[in-house]
Length: 201
Image (cartoon, rainbow, N blue to C red):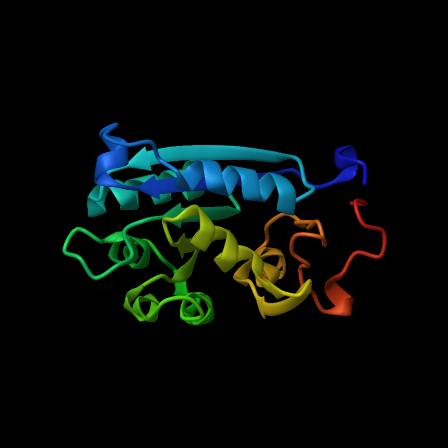
């Protein structure tokens, strides 16, 4: 498809980690998200990226900036969703939310439980703020990909990733029409909401 005819999309990538923000180790969450989005979406993308420590006021401020000032239609966060005292990403996300999208958190934990029983400890969630969808993702690149993309068994889709529902959700809240690369993740939309000529405005 000709990317010149596709809706441009601005997406926020927020990595929450005390050590990565201090330069103690290299952040892996944002590079993993950047690489995955480049494969999964065919829209021309503008990415707004931040690496910040596990401080609730800073997380809230970054989320507000990405939505209210930058106009991101989608914000993906990594890190800070466990039960440890410093894991406050869900609290910050709820604090700035207009609405909670419970199904995303439920699905993310289902996918994680295919691999480790400790996935039940994850407090990942998704919310809507204004015309933006915000999703709290795990911090490890492999888990990020599996959560977004789903799982394949012998070449067939065994578990649907959460991103399959993202484009239609963004449609419903007034964002751009996100087009996916079906070889990576196939977005689901009702027929009435699907553009007959992909890439056309």
